[in-house]
Amino acid sequence: MPRGCPGTFFKPLIVISLAHCAAACTADPPIHDVADLVFRGGAVYTLDESRPWARAVAIAHGRIVYVGDDADVVAWIGDGTEVIELGEAMLMPGFHDSHMHPMAAGTTYLRCPLDGLAWPDEVLAKLSQCGARLEDGEWLRATGLDEDILAGQGPGTALLDGLSAGQPALVTTGSDPEAWLNSAALQAAGIDAATPDPAGGEIVRDPQSGEPSGVLRGAAVGPVWMLASAYPKAALREGLKRASKMANSLGITSANEASTFARHWAAYRAAEAAGEMTLRVNASLRWDPLAGREQLQAMEEMRAQADGPRFRADSVKFFLDGDGNGHSASVLEPYSGTGGFGTSNYGDNLAGLAAKVDAAGFHIHMHAYGDRAVRDGLDAIAHAMEINAPRERRHQIAHLALVHPEDLPRFAALGVSADIQPLWAWWNDEVRHECDAVGPQRCARLLAFRDLFDSGARVVAGSDWISDAMSPLYGIQVAVTRRPPDGSGPPWNPDQRVTLEEMLKAYTLDGAWLAGQEALTGSIEVGKAADLIVLERNLFTIDPTQLKDVPVLLTLLEGKVVYDQKSTNPVPVQRFMSSPQRGSSSNESSQGSQEY
Image (cartoon, rainbow, N blue to C red; front, side, top):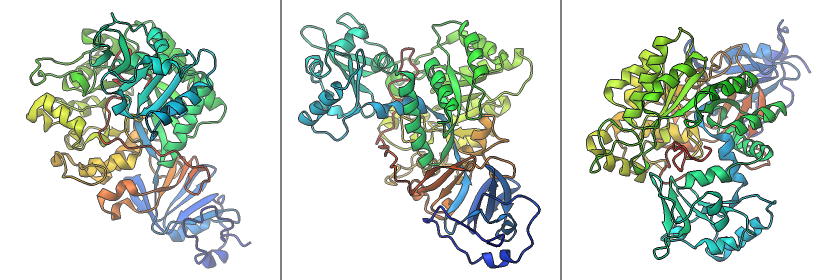
């Protein structure tokens, strides 16, 4: 075949055309290598400030070798080049989710699924079936139970005892604020009649005997989840595979693992060594406030051993406060009607810890939900920068549900990235409860994304998956419209709406910068890795309330297809919660929280 004529094509869902081949067939061969893959004839949103839009992109050996117009890309087409005509589709960089929990959240797909099953017959039959497959000492882990079943005292421990062969059992609802335990699980967790309710949680008890009924709510679920989530390495790797497959189907090519335990770190390393990873993952190693400063040495060793092309661990995670549930976010002014100020997990120790971690060269990742926690985090980082030597720092504070106006300019001044979860920013039960807790004046400042962008802060975005839907397009749509994901209802705090351009940058180039990978990925520029996605439509030409409905047709990581819509292996569908669960479900910030 003459040079310049396309050969085989792997994407029949996108229209392929040979019409442009005629001119190329008579052209002299170029002196450079030919491309492995060419996209042309459509909208290419590059995120490159010097050239925001293009028409064609060529890829060779996993790298972008050409960005420009349709006419000049012909020189890159050879006998073995696959050519995709974009048509109405849009090519852009892959999404970077700056705050999610892919490995731990992925293990939820290994749990016994109860979604949609009728109570009691179908649920009990499924639990019995799952219980029969347990290995010795293994927990029965199930999810998707209807919350109404756990109303009052719930079904009781005895019923679940008979379905789990005497092994500990933990059954959670779809959003995990409630759980049903058997006797063995209560015993393993050390929960009995004398156990007090934790802050922000409840151990439901028999009103006569005072014994636990088997139902836990809120923060009480976290410690038991910790016990039940001690999966072996093989299961963690399987969870990562499932989560990565879902992420790739949604156009995600890079993620910040927001709370990494030692066994997760080991499983990530094993997955990378085995060539299993289809996501770039930068892990934030979780700081244990009960373990002391000696854990820093172990973290330094973990960082040194996790420096591969797909997995790195160069950040440390601090949970400064709680979340919107149970008034556990740390606030500057008391909650309405209670006089409480929320939970502060570090107090005066934070500045010293931050300085020590910063001096060791780590990037700092802080969970801060309330405005006092945000201020404490900024103060601690400022202290670290003041006493430590200058260096490149990529610190971030995540969630930022409430930020005091005086602290907004400090993000840019300190170079601290503002990590937002945009899918939370619509009027729902969670927001309503938070507004009741903080009053109307502070309610108007909740999730103030416009203020963060206008302050000059570098804003990055993440899903906090599994607590909400993983899809970046869901989050982008809500941030742009401040309306419910289904488009119903008026916008909430509409003056805090942001632009599509701003959100795409937060999910691509700025997310790559936070991960220290802006020279490698995050935009479509010559020399960068071909971490790219093809969307069915140009996002800039549709109604913003339809952004979430635009399918991802193709996802590439270093030029390799990691998701193709034509795939015969279906990706699990993630249910979207009608009221988002904050802080990674059952109060991730509590010291005994689940491994999210």
